[in-house]
Image 1 (cartoon, rainbow, N blue to C red):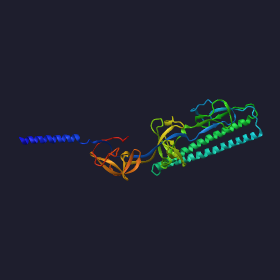
Image 2: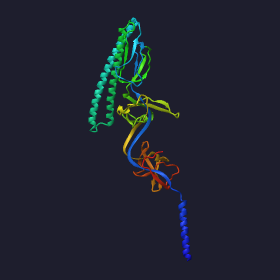
Image 3: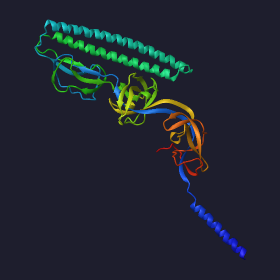
Image 4: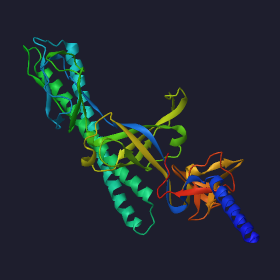
Length: 401
């Protein structure tokens, strides 16, 4: 009887001790963990930029006189050869021999400018034809893998630049022809009271960017009246850090982000200016930057709402790997002179040294130390140690803070 009583007391004591141990044991620390996976890794960086027109046309008064009111507004579309303004020559203006000789010389210079513009247009057309034939040949070779995609993109960009140069030469020809016609009209009406009204014609198909004059007012020869531009030739200018600019080259792909419309716009680097300059950041730090110019590759109808001088953000794709082992960059930390992560095995943390490769923003390539499917702590801190018991909370998406 006494033996059974002692056994019962012992059982009660063991049960009480087990309950006390269970209640007083330290709680497992919950931690966010992610799995190491294989996939595509893109090395990129983002910078703020703005839209810029590569070419602008300032329409000036060809002669001195009285400008009639200009009814065009900013944003109005114009066609090449469309009258933009009208100028009434000064009344009772007589030309002395010196002024007559000067105007005749200016008329001859305008004719020479027309001829030069024609020559440039012919040269640009020849370059465009040659570049187009080169693109056709490279596309045929590209089917066999003999030509890289970058070389084909550069050849297609050369065709676009040659076509733009042809259009610019044609606009210069029309502007010189307009100057010649204005001078011829002035010479024909010399000595008359008033003379014929001289129309000011548009040299391009585009839009009105700025009005320098609006109301009827006297103007001098060469005084700016309107500024025109073709928004179809809009480019993006980015002030990139010099360290970032060294990673870029003509043809580097990019994306225009947060531009005000839906989705990202594909773009391509066309020019990197060789000269740098110092810019003070918002934190007061001196930075060396240079200007990088990009063409928007998407159809113009997709970004037709963009205008000159609009703010955008650009993401540059510097490098790309198709199939690499990658882990979140937030999981890596310095362990002395090496990089390390905390790998989760069951309910225990294990300190593992790793060798990182290419960095891709939120992810980093792991060349040694981990295997596909390993679970690692997403955000390690100084309270963790090797062997610590934890409660892993696995995430299905990339960790974010």
